[in-house]
Image (cartoon, rainbow, N blue to C red; front, side):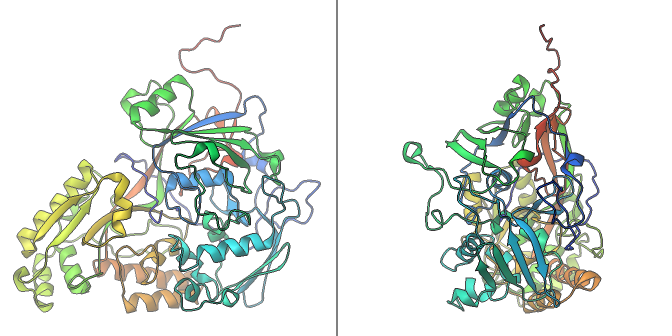
Length: 559
């Protein structure tokens, strides 16, 4: 879900098998006496967690950062977690499998050609102020997000919708030409360019949330130092924000939420800490029962809560194609072929040779692993830069970390010594790094991308020439043709085409994968129910509750 959705994590992991996400129209939510028209397929919430009334307040710790509440502007993993509390789209994530569960959508119908989806909004779906949730709230929100003036990070996700790509690129100015239609208060019709079985999984992402009409043109949703006059956003999720500053966000359960009876927690407090020591202290004192950010592991008095699993995520470097001569894939491939890959990936417990973490059904492809200096020299000569003569300075832009310095140093030294490329390293502060990736003046950058749903498309769509997430500025016609071809295919044939597209990215040196990223959380699953290890490291707050009270280690309960 960043975009950069970047989470800084330690270099260790336990192997965890990530399964593919089913993409079909046969899902089921829990059936109650008030709900008799549900579609078949997903277990009752009782199988996810028992409801416990004894404790109803939870404090979670995240690393300090500038939190963006407007999901049209957001790209961070920590924000995606917060959004599970305050926003809800047509579908939401199953807390364990990450499969799509019907949320604001009560039911849906698919046309015979599988390109038109008609959703019926729940009659009892409301914003926290009591206003009914309307189909127009979805339509207006989606059109706002993909407007070319807004330049939203996730706008290219909407390209599966008829007319969306031309609209967000300014080629079509009439929103009526976009296949998003609110034909009634509770009826939303979406027309796709081609069949997309993964569409419900995509709709779980927060960028497909609705927006209350009063918030649509409000440019600033966060207080930004103006807490006294600030009005919280009117949202439709299971919780609503009541207080926000740079240190904490306080949320209360929304009594207007359509499924409020399923929500056990009455209060959420999200704490934002400056240091890992501060986070560890809150765990040790018992104030926080979930740490999702920087933490000092050595300072933990109880390490039983350390949870590690492999994510559908990859840490990688990329070579920009924005300027000559780096737009020549022969030069990028030469740079890739001389690197000492075993040494670069040393210390990473899940070294990655490919961009996409292996998921069920996706073809295995040959990744980047071999060093071939002779071939690199030939490619450079073919491109007109024999011995590196005439090549401009290559700028590697890094974050201020020891590991980035190690890898960046290896790249710089290798390229200078083996190919004669002049190289300079720039270190950018963390709070500026994401924005600097959008700017010019560099040739190599890095990111960690966490898939927003368990499908290769979430990794591959961001390398398209007009994607807002294409910081590498790749513009490769062969790649575009493969991606377009995949949009008209289904099943194994589609996955084979996507694998071919990924192989092209790797072979042409656009992406340099380093490691598959582990998710690291500190959470007491003996105390918290409804929190599961999963491939996206998203843990919807709706399902979390406390089990029977268990005292902290070394604490004796007085009678």
